[in-house]
Length: 294
Image 1 (spheres, one colour):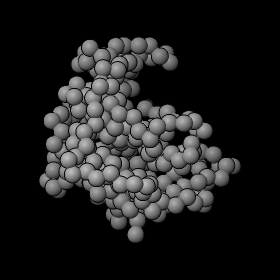
Image 2 (cartoon, rainbow, N blue to C red):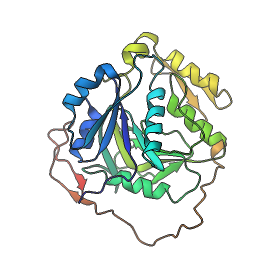
Image 3 (cartoon, one colour):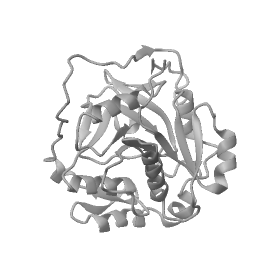
């Protein structure tokens, strides 16, 4: 029996029925998920989705130009109606998921890392947002802690449904909601032990690119975040385009709080994961790959 997450998993997607990178990853991993799409895209997504694992949800709005926050809030409400304590919400351009073990980034073949992350976060009372680090930020053969607390969480987020802050704004919604949580004295957890193979922004056709990224560049995107949080952020020019820089130093003092009933267990729980060597990474076709399965 495969190990999958306890909490519902949502992908917010638009105009990417042909690529469906995150959905394809979940289908390969035999992991159940919801994918929320706008009405004009429903037929294409429904036809492309493996119904054994994916359920296509139709959003009650379309082409509003306000970014993905509105759809993410709708998924949030959907998970509350299901009675869930938390929910996952992901971008639609994530090719694979990985476990970092012995300084190697190894692809996983089930939803087991989502379950492990849920169990870890559930031991605390003050972690409304957590998620996975990007694969390309973790260099192979280098050492990293299993997680980092009190920083931004992007693209793959586990959100507690009682979190007092919702998605807002047209851009940088991830950074904004994390900063509001941190400013309130709560914590975030970014897992280095579990990674997402996120494609770089604006490299996958579709999504919100046509509505505003392609037309507006990165200035407005970064400026909006700086205007919302001028106390900890500023504009910087990097790689020939504008970015925002956020100082997370003031939040180092935010401490994790264990549940009163949490009992620490000795030893390491591998959640049934076993290392196998039976696939080839499409990005490196001449190099044998490794993966974790259960």
